Length: 177
Image (cartoon, rainbow, N blue to C red; front, side, top):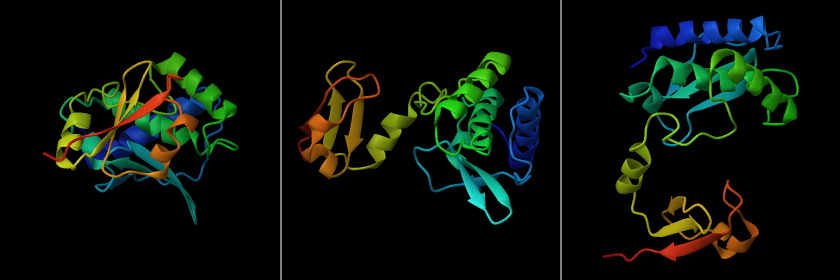
């Protein structure tokens, strides 16, 4: 488990690693990482502020027993790369920088990571249990499931969407019993 003090040190280490690779991260990144207890599925966030950029991580990432410093540094690196010019989104330049960091330091930085990839295999099931899931969107190709509490406009036009693997999606209603 990583504490708040260690988190700020890890941020500085990640910034130095990026700069060692000549990745032009912003010089206006706040020195203290914000720990947010509200997010349930997002690992981190980079926000533009009046003075530069704020890096945030979700509390569950720090509280998770199986979450190593390496994983936390990967999340911090993902967010730090958003501070580079033309990298606030996950475009080609951002992906290029992520690839450099992955190759040099063994991170697994990508646009989206699953709980299993982050060493938190049981978290998605715990989340589903804590909510009243009424619908499941499931990929016909890989079988990945996306639990949902309510019927949304996405489900009305499910044929217009694809899974991350490229497979078609289908919606199932779970009984209320």
